[in-house]
Length: 499
Ligand code: NAD
Image 1 (cartoon, helix red, strand yellow):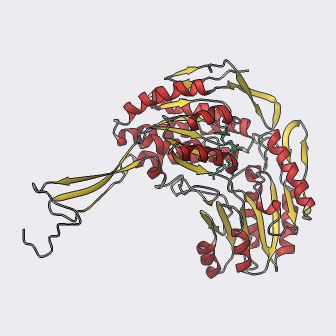
Image 2 (cartoon, protein in one colour):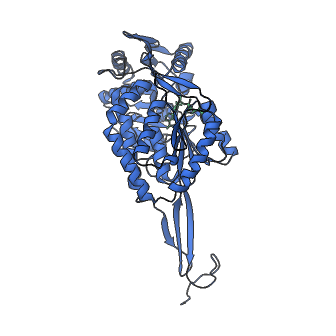
Image 3 (spheres, helix red, strand yellow):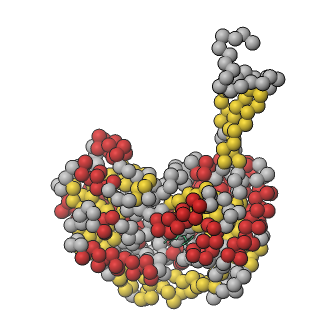
């Protein structure tokens, strides 16, 4: 089995502990991908010292030049897209079409960052005084701690690191322990593209050790975290106490609302993709399906037929619709929620159990599951399950549907299928989510738009698009007074004065 290393201090190095964890293919646990470093606080300490040197160098590199490195990273990712997708599916499980999309999101983010190198706009505005200029511009902040989840092994690290680096910061990257190989390949590409070595540090390991060491380190002023709301709370408490700049992207409980007048074929394709794509392990997965009275029964019948016909299997095999769950703990959590839903009186229409795939008996598969007769307030309607489980709820009016959508602690994405433009516009205005799709599923973010959620999904920042550049840079304001006189803001007014 191949042994992987950390990248610290400009070199590939073993962990100080000398210990490793194994990474296995969730479609076949007999397939071992490699041993990865079980690092700790001492490795993080070395990474911080190196990243500070990297930061001193990189912050002085002009932003358009930093952008050129991003462009080369995008070019290399484009050349290697299929190979990266294959190794990503092997360690994460989702089908190749999805992992190719995951790489493409990284490529799009790289090219967006490249072009941002020639913008990074500040503002020049009129001063209230004569012969004085007033302007704002962006400065890098320092070393950024980047902590990422398993479900988008390439896209999410790139959403965070490319804008951070473009702004002139250095990064310490801890990938999720289930997907360390994709993280290692990303860092290799960044180095090959010409990123100065000490600007990026890769420290593998567990959240409670490496993750916590990064979050708690006083010389890492910026933390960007994507993961569960429970972990985010721990990260947030520490960062609040230490006055760190923190971006949190956390859980979701996203609803699709289908009205009687909707194009039902379109809505059916949308919900299958939204609920069971990535085996339901997306922050934006459709986990609640709100069906209006008039179409409720027929839609559910068609949905169950289609859900039963989805092909589970190895994501690297042609024809697979749904891959495995990421690990045994995730699978057991889904099983617990099947019991919870049945205990609450929901009807299990299909799925609800592990699936044994011929030839892949050592894989972590779970059947696409639909619960009906779910009522607002049930746990399966409120809590993030993070698996292929969809809860269907009946509604009568738009007011009722919007209230159900909003009555959860999360607020990432929502989706509305209707042909009524008034209802669609009301949904955009009234649904408490960071993203609302009209006539499209709850998933499908594009790299050049802001991404994130409200309530307990986030803490007000956004990834993606132009907004993320504000998170990774400090605004500085400069005033230049060339009047040769003491001019006093708010006191001297020149109204009616010739000179
Ligand atoms: P997780 O919270 O278990 O882990 C996320 C990362 O945090 C991992 O790298 C982990 O090692 C690390 N971590 C764990 N404990 C830590 C600690 N005490 N200190 C610092 N780091 C720690 O999440 P996961 O299971 O990998 O991902 C699934 C979750 O992520 C879901 O809740 C999903 O909704 C969410 N998610 C959100 C978004 C978004 O943009 N809102 C995107 C993808 C996933």
